[in-house]
Amino acid sequence: MTQHAHVSLLNQRRVGVLLHISSLPSANYVGDLGVEAYHFVDFLHSIGASVWQTLPINMPHADNSPYQCLSAHAGNPDFISLEALQAQGLLAKDDLTGLITNKSHLIAKAYQAFTQAEDKKQQQSFTKFCKKHAHWLKDLALFLALRNKFNQAGWQYWPEHYKNRDAKTLKLASKELAQEIAVIQFAQFLFFSQWLSLKAYAATKKVYLFGDIPIFVAYDSAEVWAQPHLFKLDSDKNMAVVAGVPPDYFSETGQRWGNPHYNWDAMAVEGYAWWISRMATQSELFDIVRIDHFRGLEAAWEIPSNENTAINGQWVLAPGDALLAAITEALPNICLVAEDLGIITDEVDALRNKYNLPGMKILQFAFSGTEDNPYLPHHIEANSVAYTGTHDNDTTLGWYNALNEQDREYVHAYLREYRSVEHEVVMPKDLIDLALESQANLAIIPMQDILELDSSHRMNTPGTSSGNWHWRFNWQQLSTTQQEYIKAAIARTGRH
Image 1 (cartoon, helix red, strand yellow):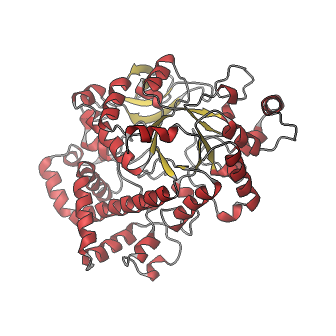
Image 2 (cartoon, rainbow, N blue to C red):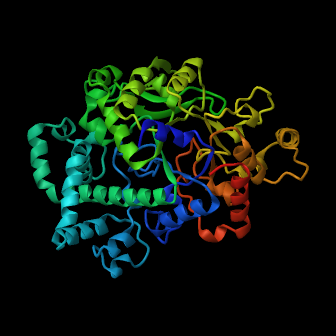
Image 3 (cartoon, rainbow, N blue to C red):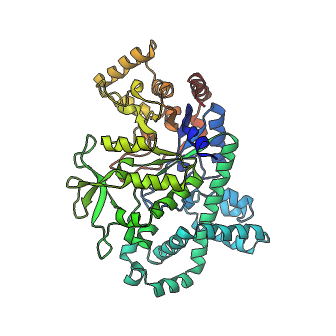
């Protein structure tokens, strides 16, 4: 695809739906890349939408947050469809009975069948995959195998020789854990194969996949263990400073995320190769990629690691211009979106505009009562992605129900003035209409809003550590009326 063709993905009036893979209907504990993912592509096609946005699809820690992952490259094995493995003859029907809450033993079983299969072509594909992705897959597989060996402890708690990657120790460990390492690599092969099949199917329906990458990686990740010199660590490999955001309207103490900061000088020496390879993986999996917390590429909030809150941090400049120049030179077809929410300075806007990256406009933030609010629909420019809300917001119905009388009246007045709405306000439909009617080239509607669901269906509440990331929908929640309404609204606003 030429650069021009690729960029034009975001130069047309499109509409998409935000739904994470885990939120797909499923008989098991989490949605996956099986038949329901294909049904969802068909649904998007049927309503005239051409974009499916997900959250990061990497491998999370035990809390399931897709924004704190064990690897910047690896896909989440929970998303592997076991039904697809059964169809390939790698699992028996009996393997899939009952509620499956852990897929790892079944993936190991499928690997045994795979190694004994007559079909040598598949085995060649696996070997090829391991070669192509060796630059991250080798470290990842050893990292995860060692994590299992040490009862899921973070690498910083491993015995010294393992923590510090003593060459002889790792060579012995690779031999000792060879079988487990092979299964981990096989799981990644399955994930990538299933994902790319879904992407190819989506392309036949003219549906583009829109992904998301957390700007930082988790301290307990394969990358920080394997390449500690690329992160700001002290001589004992502990974090000297951690990432977060300062106090703001949402939080008096700010947010202390606890991720390590990048050692940008070390990255620059290597021509930002780490970032380029990370973005190359995302570019293979997705047609469009959102950079979460984009402002951190201009300057990031550094908090001394011994501070319990984010109050006593400082802004430290980051080489965003050099980084984006390196990424776009190496990957000229990459299609990026900047998550530019929060405290945004002129410098951050200048960086985003220099690379012509669309920013995000959240309609739930628009009605604060000031005329200059950048999220008000009539202020939204074409090079933007307009949302009713995101995975971090309440559902639109939940948001509306929680408004105080003054804010609610402001919403009503706006709808009367700008949309000449005479009817009684109906949420979330009226906010969906505002997003679709806006000038933004891309409008994204969370699935919860299409289904008209309340607060009990939100995906994530920032600043809380439990009860998040579990939401799933089922097709019974979608009425014919809802489906016809969204289809008509998409057609009426000239989107596809």
